[in-house]
Length: 379
Ligand code: CAA
Image (cartoon, rainbow, N blue to C red; front, side, top):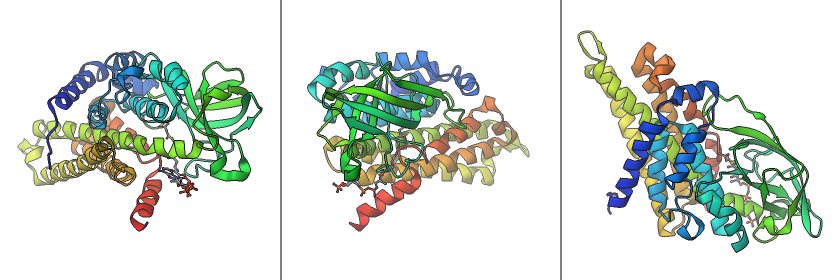
């Protein structure tokens, strides 16, 4: 068993670390405060090849492995989870979904600009009445012969207003339940497609989250992904990889908060010595480091399984369940280590604590991961 990253993976990790420090850190507090989307930073991430990391070069991607992808997610998320969620959704949900299941026409027209970072995409599954219960889609796509007619509302869509291409899940044959669901490629600007106001969120405030409304939007037949009725499986298969990306995001949030707490504890003095030398703080740091390392092993293993072409449903859900809990626990402790300073924005840890929470909610709540894991182990 090898626990060593390759030279190439180490270089990619370093590039992401440098980017996070030099491009994401300046301005991250202001973007969070003013809910400002990191547009310039996302453009540069695209130029670095981080928006289509696992897509083949033929379609404008970087042709890298999933381990490199989680390394990048981890480093970016140490500093700015609002930027890293763009990387996660574009890579795991949108580009992966199109490359794995799209037609040649769809790959050429839509995947290439997304993978090369000229455009970004959004994945639209959640609805006002269908979050965890994803089979209960109320959005409909009526088959009209030459085209589909799309009607309905999607909620909490990441990249909601900044995306150009939207993968939308909708019900075509309600009598067939999940077997009647389809996935469609929808373009911004199609008639009848409107974008609701930006959500005012607790965390990842720089990310661009909106409701989307579809009112008699005509979708060309060639924009359906896969066979008629493949949409639910498409969503599930795509989310499996997405969960590894969000697990890596949670890992990065935890590691970022821990690194700040460690530095602070070495510098801050109380009762005549650095607080790191007080057992109360040293033991907290020990627990934080241990849980982060355990989360890291789960995340890297899930990515490695994906790279080997082995099943990763169980590993991905375990990684997400555990890493997101570690993100919550570690960020709360990082604020505690900082004392009063942890409660003010300049020290970054309060933002990481707020950002951590979403990792237990999106791309399947912790309870959904428990459901997936228990089904897999009881099968
Ligand atoms: N791969 C392939 N097929 C799968 C699958 C998988 N991983 N999981 C389920 N399926 C198939 C099943 O085999 C079944 O098909 P058959 O009838 O042909 O056998 C079908 O899908 C229905 O499966 P279930 O009976 O298991 O469905 P369920 O309703 O009991 O539960 C669920 C499924 C796991 C709970 C699912 O609904 C789920 O994952 N819900 C959470 C949704 C979610 O993660 N939403 C996140 C929104 S996206 C987001 O957050 C993006 C963002 O912007 C950041």
